[in-house]
Length: 446
Ligand code: PMP
Ligand code: GLN
Image (tube, rainbow, N blue to C red; front, side):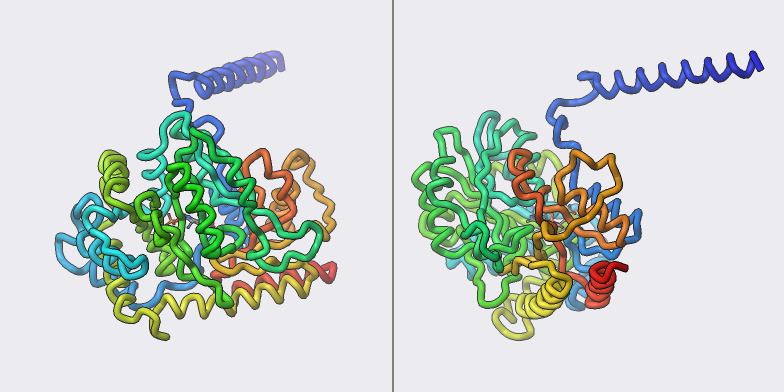
């Protein structure tokens, strides 16, 4: 017995020493850079894993669970079988056929000539376009204004270049009254103006917005543009959902307003445009004098993104250029399809007593969960914002995955907005039906 006890004691000591050494290694400044501190948590990593672990019906992460349209799938297959060069490096800043088509397509939208070689940078998804923008344009100590709620990666990207994020929230128009549309969430012109200082380098906007679905009106964009021009500030405009607007809302590019082309970086996503998020083709479009600096970051980091995927996206844009504005255009068909899915999700939420905030655009719908009383048994989540507790509970106990909206707020404001959760409706009707089934059973106490 004595020998066994000694052995157990020795093993325990070895284990504790090894844990201490491991902790020392983790904390050692020699083995990591400080820029990774405080940005290690990621809502997509955490909640996508949770959905998978519990095999939940997934209305969480924003991706279509249906196939991209046939024409881009065929274009991809054609590219992959298109000979040796389709499998090799292409031009660093964008495959020639893609930059040519992006310039042609968006030139028509913004009403100016876009130089495919100077004014366009193709990136690994919109993520990398944003990353290159912050790396290339923001210096240590610079302030970047971010409108809340915001797509979560803006803040860590600003922090990683040593910039300071300065937040300004969209607020529901009339506190207390029923907020029915994302259009009821507005920026206060005075509050926004008060955030500009001599250190402000850029503002980031996202229209249509993730997670709220707000589509900025021309007057709102003009107010932002006036401040950018007055203070000589850049505008990073994330427009990955630009084709997805509903009920007559119209997407306007801030880059098309007078005096804004020279200071706006417009970010787009082939993944969102053609329902192929896994392809990771994105772009930044701006004046060549800005793109030049983003190219420097790009060529020294990823160099370029997959040739065949760029070829397929190029072919998609070629087709869309010809069909633009017609019922055959995917840019008409996708929003038409999503319009129905959005309605379906909204009626499902209403039927179980949840009030949706109708998005004017995008993939997502948020709803206020404060009327719902749930007894969270899991004590380990005590300090977390209420929406996070709720989403974990809904995923684990009911098998329905969603996303907590506090993840789209700064730590300073997340508690103030922790009564909303986000549902994604770019899903098969069968997925939406499965979600409805869960919500109905739950509302009937099953
Ligand atoms: N911006 C917003 C607002 C998003 O929702 C996303 C997620 N798709 C991205 C950027 C990143 O897009 P991508 O998948 O093309 O990198
Ligand atoms: N943009 C997607 C969303 O908002 C997800 C992005 C990601 O998974 N990193 O759901």
